[in-house]
Structures are given as C-alpha cells and as structure tokens.
Amino acid sequence: RWGAEAGSRRPRQAGMGLDPVILWLIAAALVLIGVVGLVLPGVPGVIAVFGGMLLAASIDDFTRIGWPTLVALGVMTALAFAADILGSLFGAQRVGASRLALWGAAIGTLAALPFGFVGLVFGPFAGAVIGEFMARQRLDVATRVGIGTWIGLAIGTLAKVALVFVMLGVFAISWLVG
Image 1 (cartoon, one colour):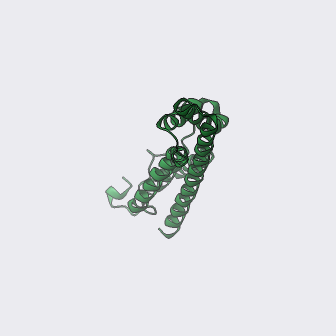
Image 2 (image 1 turned 90 degrees about the vertical axis):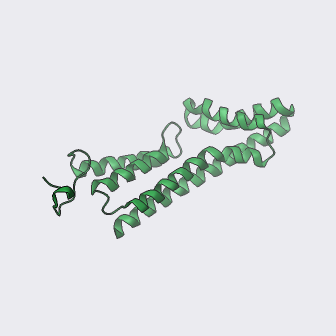
Image 3 (image 1 turned 90 degrees about the horizontal axis):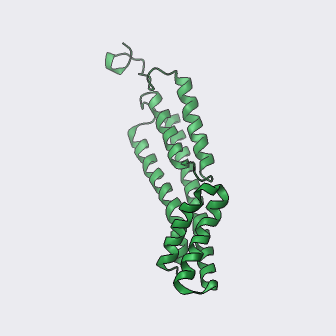
C-alpha cells in the first residue's frame, strides 16, 4: 500500500486512482470555466473556480495548499457570491427604490436567467422599473431606480471578478510557497 497511512514518503493520490495529470487538467478546466462563468449567467463561476482550486489542492493530499488557505478561499468565494446577488439590490436601494422595486429586481434577475447575457443585463433593470412603477406610478422615478439597479449589478460583478482574481493569486502564491 502506498500513501500516508502506510508510512510511505510518496503522497497519496486523490481522485480514486486517476492520474494526477488528468486531475490537474480537470482542475484547470474548472477554473477556466469558472472565470468565463463570471460574466455568463447559468454558469456557477465562483463555485467552479473554488471547486477547481479544491481539486488541485487535493491532488497532493493538501500538502502545498493547506486548510487555512482553503478556508480563506472559501470565505472569498462566499463574499464573491454575495457581491453578485446583493449588487443590484444595493444599487436600487441607493437611489431610493421601493420594496416592490427591490423584489422586482430580484425576480427580474431570476426570470431573465434563461435568456443569457442579454437577460442578465436587462432583467434586473426591467424588474426594478416595473416594481417601482407599480409602487409610485412615476416613470421618471422608476427609470432612475432601474438605472441604479443596473449600476449596482455592474459594481457587484466587478467586485466578484476582483475577488476571484484575488483568489487565484492567493492560490498561486500558496502553491508556490507551499
């Protein structure tokens, strides 16, 4: 028997006997898909990046990337996920949106997911405008709320992208130092 449990110096290989090269290719593919998924709806970008990093860390039985680094990466994953969800809501709230506009932005985002990138751009805007118009019956106010929602979504997306690149940097430095 090979592995840490047998007292061997050779590290146990993760992945139920898969070749480490294949595991590295899968990990890299997950990270790449995740980075592309940061701006494409329907692809869980942040989760895929974290999954790729977790798989990569497990290949050498967490020798180079330890649990403290993985916990930090997990916290950044949660923050990036929250930034993505809360961005449009904070943008709408910042311009004085009603509760109906906030609900509209959230529902518009979910309803627009099947329509890809265009849906992601216009869904929260349309939902916020409709919700605000229902609440206040003023198109000018509703439009301002819709624009605030869209700006918040853009800022949330930028924050998510920045956090993922910080995650990639932390992983790379930890792997090189580890």
